[in-house]
Length: 357
Image 1 (cartoon, helix red, strand yellow):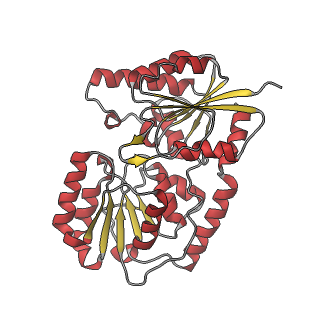
Image 2 (tube, one colour):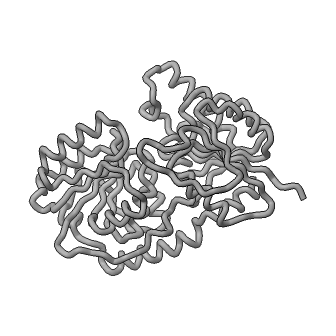
Image 3 (tube, helix red, strand yellow):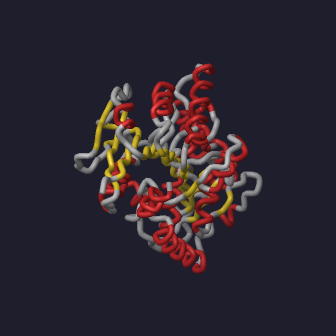
């Protein structure tokens, strides 16, 4: 029987290694997979990326010279990340008309937000948004959560088939639940990267009146908008002095999660769009107390999965509640949510998805 050909088009980045490993871990004889990676194949900034050795990976630079050729040869296209480069998204749209398409928006890509783009040319941004809408409407399936589904209906005026599961194999199954509560310590973590949508400065200013009760504020700013990052550092050091701990170096993932497990008690993610889900999930799995802006899709997704999560609302800050660790019933809730996640949201659902379209 002839195999169904599946082409996975992804920018070369931090998610792709685990994604490819997932299909190697869960092979299925019905499908023949080819992974088309475009961009800088050596590194992303100073973040080294390890890709498993396999014969079915194609690398191309940002010109994507052979993109149409590979699309033509396939049956199903899985698009990981909606391209922000006009030429690439236009060429994909022109090539996939007879193909089945599964789209995986990264973070905020589903949304119409101009700060996604690396240019200030409003005419070009408009063209990219037009192509994005064509691609979204052409998709047979979009992998997104509840808020993403609502956005599709409210802003694109379409009712698309959607699903949410660990499609990128990025839920960090290596992060284990470990009840590691340091009594009478209050170390806060603000976000996971330096983007304006994170509202770091707003949090720093809102919490200043409680700074005598705060031991450390850990601020991961290893990537993002440099101008914004510099401003966050300036405000953080000015308000909190040595209590402000800047985390601006890229380290291996296992070391990063160990650092979080050892040094973070409470995490506050103020991003007002879909950002930081994997880091938030890992913190939840560690049994940390997590506050999330309710406008962030991650809030709904984590609640749906069963984790204890608190809304971050600067107008209603109860610091005695913030510094209170998870109690026994909440820690049990974490363990049940992990079991539910492993059973119902695992990467192996990919094959049900491929069958369904």
